[in-house]
Image (cartoon, rainbow, N blue to C red; front, side, top):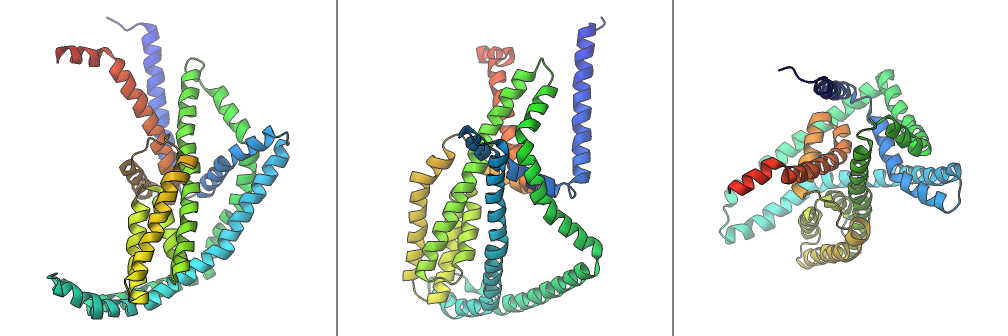
Length: 362
C-alpha cells in the first residue's frame, strides 16, 4: 500500500533536515579555524546583551546602552591583556626557574619522610626528572624561538593574528548592537508549525546557558579573586598564578578546591618549609568554599544548571579534541542544548505508549 502524500512530504522534510544538518556540520568543521574571532565576539555579545536590555529598561537608548556595555567589555579586555597576562607570564617563568630547587627540596626532605612511613620511595628518580626537565625546557625554548622567528618572517601569520585581534572588538560591537534583531529574524524564519516549540526550547536553553555561563563566570572570577588575595596575605610567591588556576577549574564543583589546595599546599611547603602555611592555605580555600556555597552560587547560578560535572568535563574535552579552542567555546552551549533535548525526549518517552505498555507488562 502506497504511503499517503502527506507522509511522503513529511519524510522528505525530515530527510532534508538531516542532510542540511550534516552539511552544516561538515562546513563548520572545515571553517573552524576561520570562525574563532566570530565565536569569541558572539560569546561577548551574548554575555553583554542582558545588561544592554536592563539599561534600555531604564529609558536609555539602545545605542547608548550598547556603547556603555561595549566600553566596559573593551576596558576589561585591555586590562586583562596589558596587566594580568604579563603578571601571569612572569609567575610562570619564576615557577620554571625555581622548579629544580623545589625538586631538590623534595629529594632532601619529603622523600626521607615518605620512606620512614613505608612508602616505596624507589619510584622517585629525581635526577632523571631534573634531566628531563632541563631537556624539555631547552626544547621549549628552541620551539619558542623557532616560532617567534617564523612569526617575524611570515607576514601572512602576522597579518592573520592582527586581523583576529582587530576583528574581535569590531564584531563584538556589531553583534551586541544588533543581537535582538538577529534573534528576531531567526524566529521569523522558523517553520510556523513548529515555531512555538522551537522558541520554548530556545528559551529553556537560554535559561540554562545564562545560569551556567554568565553565573559561573561570575563565580569563577570571584573565587579567583578570593584565592589570590588569601594566598597573597599568606605570602605565597605564586599567589596570582595559583589563584587564577583554581578559579578557572572551579567550573566543575569541588575541582577548584582540590586542585587549589593541592598545588598551593605544595607550593607553600616548598617555599616556607613549614606545615603552618599549608594549614593556612587550606583555611583560605575552606573559607572560599563557604562563600561559594552560601553566597556566590545561590546568587549567580542558582539551581537551574542541570549539567552534571561529569557531563561538563566530557563536553569540554570532546570539544577541544574535535574543534580545538572553538570546540571549547561551543562545548557548554552544545551540552546545554543536548541536555534540554534529552530532557524533553525523556518526558515524551515516559508519556509514550511504548513506556506505558512496558510498564503494564512489568
